[in-house]
Amino acid sequence: MARLPRLTLPGYPHHVIQRGNNRQAIFATPADYRLLLDLLEENAKKFGVSVHAYVLMSNHFHLLATPQTAEGLPKMMQAVGRSYVRYFNDTQKRSGTLWEGRYKSTLIQTDRYLLACMVYIDLNPVRAGLVSQPQDYPWSSHLHYRGVRSDRLITPHTLYWELGNTPFAREAAYADLVHAGINPVQQTALTDATLRGWALGEPDFVADLQKRTQRRVAKTGAGRPYSVNKSLIK
Image (cartoon, rainbow, N blue to C red):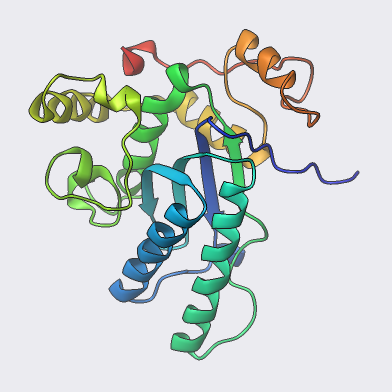
């Protein structure tokens, strides 16, 4: 069976996962993490992609991003991937592939899943046992949203701005969302939809999305949406 093209539409948030080949490490030093973030910042601007959240793990990374054009996200990921592999191979005196094939991604329903996806991304280092609190992990966008540092890569989504009328109110509200966390069903929904490439949203959203592209957006019909705790999107 032919592989489906990626589901990429402008104006919608996309959850992206890029893994190292055979789960191998894709970072060896702190400089490697910084270089990948620099490449993401440079190419997000170049190709018109707003990056809302990220986390860089030892053998993979996650992004939540909204492209302005249909080609913006694929071009950004291609440019970042190629440049980073050349750099990593040179510095580590290695050759060959670094990535586990092409990146995985899904298009998500904004009002239903965007904040939940941000929480999911922030909690990756906690789930992996690397830290006890997301604010203790340096290679994610979490500290930007907690007001600890300003991250030039990040473009906050409108839904984040709606969390409060002041920076302090937004930071506190977002901290509460992360503290509430996501349950295993939510985690599985976000992971599986991304790895399989099916749109993640309620039936009406998925059905409307199908009208906008010839590429199938769900496995069967409008698909069966996953359930995410609505307290995450108040």
